[in-house]
Amino acid sequence: MKHASSRQLFDYWNERRAGRFAPERSEIEPGAVRHALGDSFILAFDPAADHPFRLAGTRVCALFCRELKGESFAGMWEEESRPALRNLVSIVADEAVGIVSGATAHVADGPPADLEMLLLPLAQRGRTHVRMLGVLAPLAPPYWLGTHPVERLTLGTLRHLGPAIETIAAPRLVRPPPGDSPRPGLVVHQGGRN
Image (tube, rainbow, N blue to C red):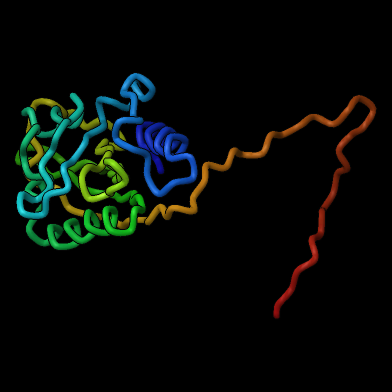
């Protein structure tokens, strides 16, 4: 995940699920992810209505220059991307896995912008076919943000975030104790071909 909002929301979601496939919707506290709220959204899992927005953060709405509540999420995507997007939303609900994907935002009067999309399942009374939590954020804010609406989105590469994924902290670098100095030179690790 490249965007800070995606990382913050994923880390919080992962913590709240506590080893389950997905946290309950009622367990999500907006204040805990306040820095990511502007880039966040909640979708209703409703294939007949193409998964409408239940909530959309201010920066997500700024991409389209309008309030998105009630609008079709799949309808925001170009025709060629919609079948794959609908399939991804179903996979997130059916398999209770998250996905992170690249996307491109296209406007009438300006260059396209690279976005990151995160989709995570939410449970409601144990069911995962009700709501989804997500992020849609530009990797670098385009100059046209809030003045030229995104006309269509195209789907890019994606990665599944399975239920076994746990947040793994990066190892800490520790200074050697006084008097111990790191040994210079080359370190050889055993390996080889099978």
